Length: 288
Image (cartoon, rainbow, N blue to C red; front, side, top):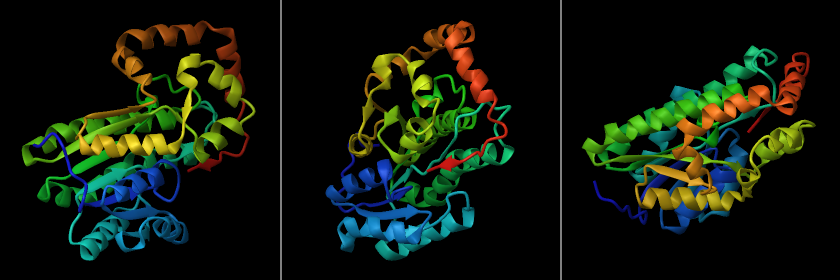
């Protein structure tokens, strides 16, 4: 397997690509000379995003990543349009309003897992025959929540930990075919999802204070998208932004037990948890 990957002339498919990290990734891929398929829930949004790229080398498709048949049709349409598929970026994801597991509705819990974990699986599943045949590359988008305490965001953390394990295994399994995979871990990105789940939540500021200040830094979606594109070009196993989260990832086995114990004992953290636990009767909104 080559250690570098030239994107010029390749065909890429990005889910959740009408905005945020997905669109920034699509922009970067198009700038490298790749043809890009923009996949999002709404056709109008997908079309508008494709129009913002080079129209001759991009088009939009509407699909729900949780629908296996829909994702199979997306891949088939891509192959029919461009002759194949070389890169898939499984980026689509949602988050729920902060609440404890006890207070969260079963419907919200299930939907987050279905989109964030099984949506990634179904996206990759549909694309994998092409990726193997063309010695291509897969990116699965996890989060730093794959390895930090997910209090108040249990289904999100579960889904991202699952995505991490999926991506790691995929990389090992694809090597024999000359293909590869990356797991992308992002901290706080300045996206609509973060604005709605943290900034617009009355508890959001206090929840963020529980995270060490250096790790609360936000970066723009453009930086995250550029990191994904660079990771594809180098066939990197891991993509982490902001970079300062890399140390936390490496030291997770040592640091996490200490942080977990501190959260159990910290009065301010437990007060926030008590308020999250009282949200059982509130509307459980989901944010993409």
